[in-house]
Length: 420
Ligand code: SUG
Picture 1 (cartoon, helix red, strand yellow):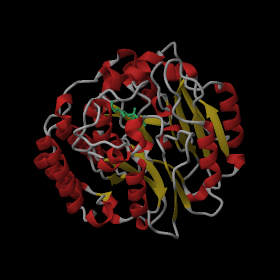
Picture 2 (tube, protein in one colour):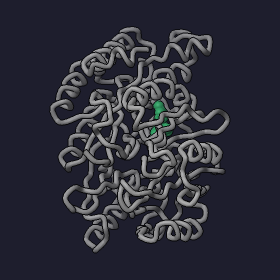
Picture 3 (cartoon, protein in one colour):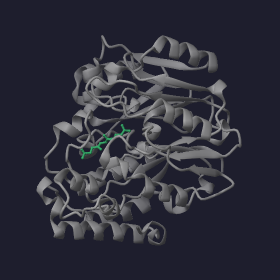
């Protein structure tokens, strides 16, 4: 088997809820206090994976994390029953579903030692995400345990916030040749935090053994963060030789694109002007939080978008005109991930791209339709139907969340590896 892109989607966990924990993420803030539907959420995520399989793509999974995170609560000297509501919600968060924030991945063809390097993200800016990395690291070490193929790195130390692949893009002329890796960092975000620190990005590039001649560090524009683009993947996405981005995504786009063209003359920049789609509409519709994928058998590229993009007329008209033209993106595939979207997570947030040989990956983390059917049956039988904010301390709900998780992990044969 050869090296290819594999999308690992985070299965949406049984504690999925709307607690409004992410300042700067407008969807999270505006849905604070709403009643969530964990079962529907997880089934939407599974349907997205099914759609990707039907496009001929290779699909992987990451498991939800054990919630509530009693270790984290204990390290704060508290417990679920005693914690203040925002700490309780943080301990219950299902935010590890957004696998684009799990890690940064550099494929073997880009690295000095010819191995695929993976650095788990520390996610230290947001309390509810800061305690994800130990369980994520454990899954990465389990899924990518082949020592002759992967190197898994510990998180970048504080105080340098690292949010993983959501702020990382790779452009290349083929996955088996060296590509250009682009690290997007924030410095200012108006009233909102810049979650990716440049020193974290530089450290990841050094640890992965990337060539400075094929690595770029690019500042995200302050206006994009201030408008709600808390990660770069809310305003830009790249695949092979194509970068698809909003005009206002980067602080100095002319310098960035000039440097990129020097490094990769074949690059195709598809820029959406603010005059056609405002930053506000881009963020409302999440059109850039799409999976830009290459279809097998010469089918060109497809954009797997949130169905919300269809409801903003300026966005959908622009996209339809784009695919009708002669560009590299030939197909629009809307998917319904509304439960995740209401917390600011579109199709691209839900997946981590790993360029690797599938034969090097622990098969328990790879899925086909049949395996997804079995996972969906467990979700349908065990995941809570609804969670209201006041339920987060309900002992019956907690017991059912724990049972749901154990059933899935046991079914996938991962209890021995993932039990906390
Ligand atoms: O980190 N939302 C996530 C969404 C992450 C999206 N990922 C990418 N853009 N790649 C976040 O802000 C909401 C949690 C809450 O409010 O309960 C949340 O964490």
